[in-house]
Length: 68
Image (cartoon, rainbow, N blue to C red; front, side, top):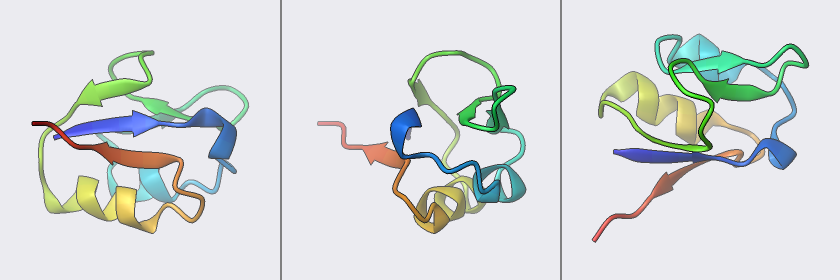
């Protein structure tokens, strides 16, 4: 599954990292980033933790990217 990060929407609440710590990390200012890359879109493993992290983001700073 592919996920897009929208940093301008992130409020640094930490729910993404709590739910999927192997996928999400933080910049020094607390804004979400991927653990393994500085890109704003990444292909990540599909699992319940990652899906929960995306769904629980209160500002929709994490979005699933639809693939064809």
